[in-house]
Length: 499
Ligand SMILES: [Zn+2]
Image (cartoon, rainbow, N blue to C red; front, top):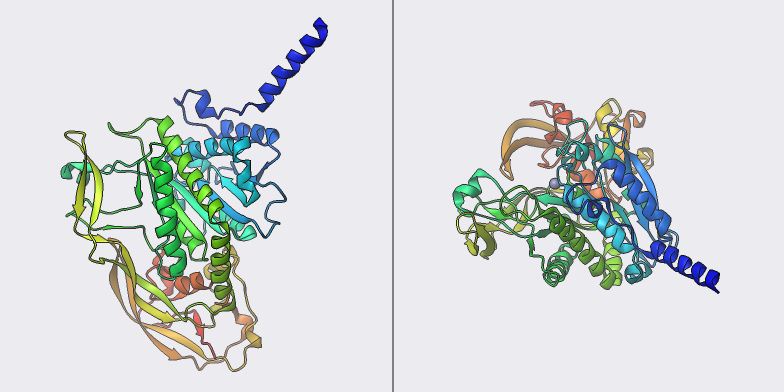
């Protein structure tokens, strides 16, 4: 009898140990030390051993050869069940924004608990907890090539962003979120006497080429859901609102550039977000525990939102993507935009540097609306000369669909001449703004000398924005491609007009 009892107790102990969730390295350190790359590696592998929902894969390597892990959660074969919705979250593109990674690891742990299992009845979820391990180990923003990964999603020159997009392209996720920290500090704000103080912010897509229905769903449904979910758990939140201080510079929502994590996926008609938790470097800052938990709860909020709205999101994304792929999306593409007021004033919650009390400031110069200031008609496609090897490399890195130019009947081809190069303000940066003349191209085209990139593809709007010489978000605004613009000369990329 004694032996039986002893065995039973032993069995129960072992069972309890197994059923107990693994603690993340941050929890183990009592929230005192950020998780190292080695600790992360061993944690995600142990977690995968404990949960039959989770598989860990490597999507690529960083500049210094560290693995980029993805955690794939699915109750069936990942990506196979078309009735489910595919969701991708990725954190820590900026290595010194540690709470994103810590929140992602807490999330991974939470998702292995029985009470969250129902999420995977509807969702196949992929989580990249650390896009920039090299930056993380050195606690610096940039990657091992000293590149800012979150400005690299259009040109895709870095191994980390290339790996992330290859993975995205494989599953064409319907929903995505890029997790960061925001830094509320700065001389301007100190002089102003107040600064932002919310635990979490959520930003949506703002590029006007992204269908209004997708932008509206994010803004009017996902954002309020996110804020309520966090408030119920004692985390403050706000809409992602860069710019300011009030009366010094305008406040807007997000950028419309497509070179960051959120908009580069948004331009493929993905329901795409950015989440930013407050960075922890000054006297008001929350401790690492609260910051990591804030990030985790924000991510859970969006997962719950997607769970509740699965059918609506799936239908909307599918419809809008089909328009892109069939070439039936809007006939005009915006290549220059700006932020505008809609008459509304923003009530912005801030904290006083002097009294440490919370207050609310009314922002007069508030520009929440992005409007196009220059459109081009969307062509059938572009012809890229094969001798422009940087451009050919870009087509390959973006995995663009390439068409057969020889199959077009009587294609009408146009070419730009650069007549002048002016400049234009782009979110307080001064960038090139060429004056161009468009003429019919009458020379002979040898199809062997060109790559034909049709615009009827998922990345069709991205292609137009990237390749138009006058695009303020285009390749010509990057150093690697600035040689394509020469005053008095023709632009080497040709437009093939729609019949
Ligand atoms: Zn960041």
